[in-house]
Image (cartoon, rainbow, N blue to C red; front, side):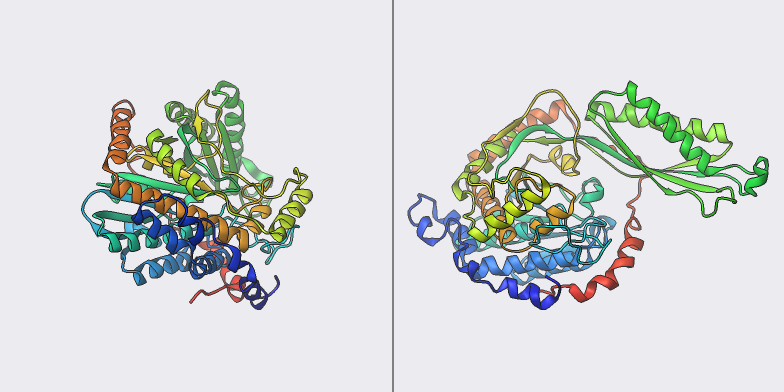
Length: 509
């Protein structure tokens, strides 16, 4: 797909006529109560699938980095406004943060929406080999274009059912920017945006369709350490104080620290500033660290890494400052919520894939050296995230899960064997399989939310579990008192690429 016109031709292919999963015919043969059936029927319509598929592809083409998602958030906000939602924007000090609400009173059910992309992952959609749209530009390598869209589709379906069947309660869409930098949710919680929420539905795109419960992933600190020294001619270095020396000494110290940390820890860094010319001693140098560990161990790990920085500053006679961008908890997924969500995942079922979609999957798998098994056929059984802590990725949904009962619906669309945060994921997050996957996710979320709104015993069971868990795991933010939202974090990088990408935008209308 080299031009906007060729992208648009793909959107007009006849597969849309066959996309319906849990469509009208099947709905009539399944025992589903009317309020839930109403939402599923809306999402099964061909025009609904096409509408939200095009919105997803548009956000895919914008590929906006965290806290720079101006077009992406605006498209979702406007879509919800047109359907009667009250939309508050620019919340918690973030221009692209929003909350869209419909209904009134209790219960209050939240759904989490994400929409940011990743740097340097530009890739043509539905192309099974590495072909960048614009070399070096951002791309949607984690599926957030499908996730924000699926939530929007689900919320509108829920609203239509609420209207028709006079369902009491409130549905809230939490537009959460900067998830790839794990920034928004801790600040949103501190701003009180989640106050009064009774349960939360999280979601994530993948090739699987399932959910799970328990403690998962890593808590994390994202911290920039800056060192300030004195410039001098490098040939007379005794007159200078090298900030770069301090960064390198800190990195040596933290690498020696690794053997004394729990085996599940993860620690990675990049030097973001280290001087301009070899013959000028750098007076400023910066290194950006991601520190990951369990909730119980992350604080001590952070303290010891700070000591490494202090020691480096002392050894080089430089000054050191710390800028904590964000700090987040592990995910604590609610079992009762996951069990409810799993029932609706099984009700919706895995989408039916066309032979063209299967062939794309096999080609991509072959190019990645993965098993050539095509697309998945069945939903996954519910998972328990038990066992010893072994580290892994992080999500700021973890903080939400400690202030309201939360579980994640993982929906399909990607190819088994794709690599997260990689061009292969960008290729999967556009076009027909992405449309089908997000539609399946929207159905599972809508059905689950309607259950929570109309079945008080289900919600009560979720709340009892959560309140008992909260007594042993009370929420306390990991954010330092002086932490501020890093609105500038991706601004220069996005400014570099936006002008070059605009000609390839798919502007949904």
